[in-house]
Image (cartoon, chains in turn brown, cyan):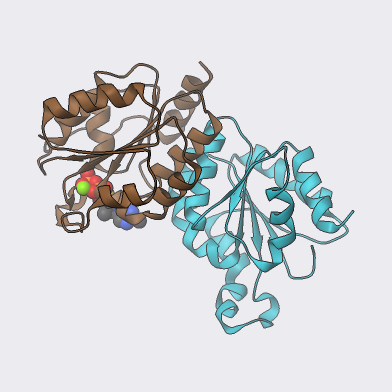
Length: 186
Length: 162
Ligand SMILES: Cc1ncc(C[n+]2csc(CCOP(=O)(O)OP(=O)(O)O)c2C)c(N)n1
Ligand SMILES: [Mg+2]
């Protein structure tokens, strides 16, 4: 499955969930699939999408918070998994699109091919950990996880392909923030 | 009231209601108070940049966050401040303990101690050096700067102040 297909699977099932995006192509593919007010496109601060998501999840216990993470991003801030496991926010769904490369910078190898991120998530006490590869399977898992308490960790193995010339997020960073805050107040 | 109590009360009075960070001995009394405070939340972070990220999430959700860190952790946080807070305009109060002040400290603190104010100037963060007689005033000023500029502001805390 291509990552853009995986992103589409999730996006098609979303309602008012808040989604924090890891930097790089993940932002661009999600923006292209469906630009939502509830999307926080983190264009810098590589690794911190899961920290931002955790801050939101603790502060908004009645709102579902989803993190669209990348393998390179997760590996840069592994400590965040341990903080999530310490605090156990029920409303957090952490999805990692794992292509085993730093795709946004030219497909250099990450170490997620040798290191089992799902095992790290289990050690970090996520209440449910899934690893999926096929689209149909992913669709079923996501449907179920959107209804369940977390913290849930889903590792989605995806291919390295991404569209050349895919649009960048066209909003300014301040607009992204303003829209996101108003979606929270809604 | 101890200086640490005065400081924590001052922060709460100004509406700060979400605390996270990594400890430093200079900040230990403050963190002890925060951890046992039933009205607020203190999240122990594993790294200072992660704390900055968590605080950003809290801010987006409507909270007023504070990050506590040693100046060594400021080094870890620079990219988060530059490519998250400063470009999205996410204000956060950052309490930074100033180890290595005037070159009187353990060797690991001397380089960072010497450049701490310059580092803040370079990245464009306003800062206030805390003095024991002007705690409320320092917090007031920090809040005003944050509201005006919508960016993080640092309060530098030297040894023996709190
Ligand atoms: C601190 C930092 N180091 C390096 C980069 C350059 N960079 C941007 S995106 C990226 C790769 C992200 O990898 P991953 O999370 O696996 O997502 P993918 O690119 O594969 O979609 C890198 C290394 C950066 N933005 N920030
Ligand atoms: Mg990747």
